[in-house]
Length: 59
Ligand SMILES: [Zn+2]
Ligand SMILES: [Zn+2]
Image 1 (cartoon, protein in one colour):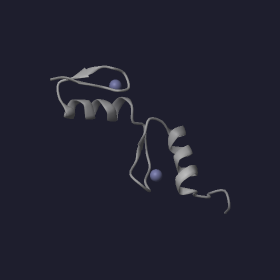
Image 2: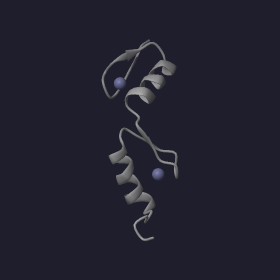
Image 3: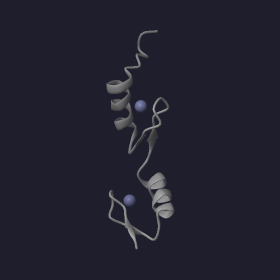
């Protein structure tokens, strides 16, 4: 049974291959605080501002 990538509809023979594909093609950013993965740095930035409220401009 093939597994389809939600992002680009490409098909893979197993979860491991899909995982490698996701990491190299769709996951570009990673939150160090909660280990959540994001498709790009902008989404990660938004996430950090909304969920972690890290204030780095105040130094
Ligand atoms: Zn994909
Ligand atoms: Zn986070």
